[in-house]
Image (tube, rainbow, N blue to C red):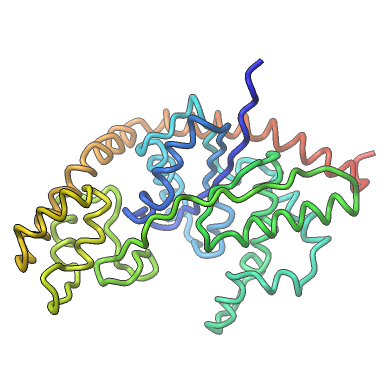
Length: 317
């Protein structure tokens, strides 16, 4: 009998277009990992409610994430893709976890501390979001959660919560491990800072050719050297350094030519992804059916784990 595959889970909030930094930092690895793990990829729409509070915007963003997942090559025959809000167990288990978690513990969460440092009025959802995230992870007996080095705290919270529940009520939840994604050098945005939606300095993953040309030509360059560092750092994602060394030697000091070469390489890379996404967008009913099918499978697993937890706490006789 073949070894059962380990369970991998990851979610992405439907808040804005993915960019090439997202792709090379995580999304590409998801496509590779789908062959080795039993994968659950969910659209974290409940988490997104902390920042997206417009019906049309939310609905479109959810659909866009589904298209993004499918367009990059996630295969619904191999992975389970679903919408978080379609599985009520996420919210119900989060409440159970909130009842055994203290406020001082949650006040150590990065998102809370960041919001507090910026003197923001913090919603209860933002404060409690680590508990919903713990529920997301623990409902599926998840073995591994792919994260960047800076996101390890999410897994630590899930493990702490599982351990506290198990200690209080009896062995129920598996302790997940972080799967630290192979570090991609931080992808600089067009302004030289880390590429991030919050900095508005991204090159969207499914950009049009016109967008790519405009964005690449606006990359900030350092006029003190012969090699435009920001252009080169992005270019490394699309060509080997051996090829780039030759190109940048030939075009030394010719920033416009080098930017055009980068733009051409990005366009060549993005074109098939964009074409696939456009085709999927024409088949909305098929995409929604994939989400429905994924939700049915996720519900069948999550509801069993939730029932087990409810028996443990005593609300099911």
